[in-house]
Length: 318
Image 1 (cartoon, rainbow, N blue to C red):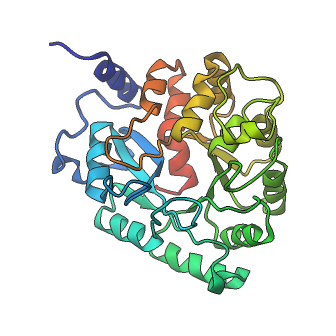
Image 2 (image 1 turned 180 degrees about the horizontal axis):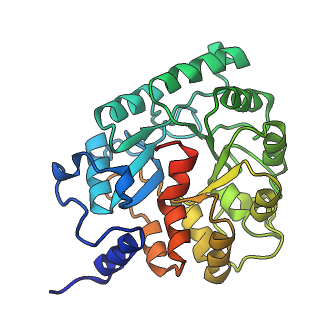
């Protein structure tokens, strides 16, 4: 029987997670209720539904699940986008909760509100809103992708409310949204101010900071050069136990592939706080994470932690 290199690599990956090749369901009907305890496939901590920028490319919950079936993604976090800088077409918390209600065995809902929303300004009001969504099943807050400095007082209210409710927050950093400076000093201010809140890092500004030697422009880009010593991510992870990383999007894949030797060592070193993600948000989108994980040579234990176990633990999925 002929088998593609991609299919062969996937079978090896799945075997490393403790499941035999060929066990993943091949149809939507079969895929209706996979068991998280079975240890099969990826848990993707970063996807979206709805429209992002192109109205011709709406991603329905059913289309997302079909894609998940194709790529052995057992469960996926679905993130709303509620800030005007985050997308052309807002994606509401209510739509995410409804999708997860319809597909409870596959989709994991997060919640989000823009910190500038008039009636959500106080910490008490924000806490009440977020707790209401958590009561409906939300497992975290995000994508927090807001056109303010990362530690703006309005942003800090959101962090305080999430800490009070007890859910993690997934954020985006670049030079437009969640704005910071080289060294991520604004993020550090939030980390030390809210030590009981688990932050999940994402976006160009976060992942460019795997390397030292950055200027302000680099925080908004996708550097291709070898990683230089002194990266803020390693520094922050060494000093703050409440910071995690989400490997999604071009920024996440690039951070590892730009310097595979350093990237592999980094994943092994930070194996307990890195999580697999794709940022899949439109039909037909190319996702580099699958090719990256075909190339990476990691111990089975490390691969399993990154691809599913860390998400299960952080999001309390079992």
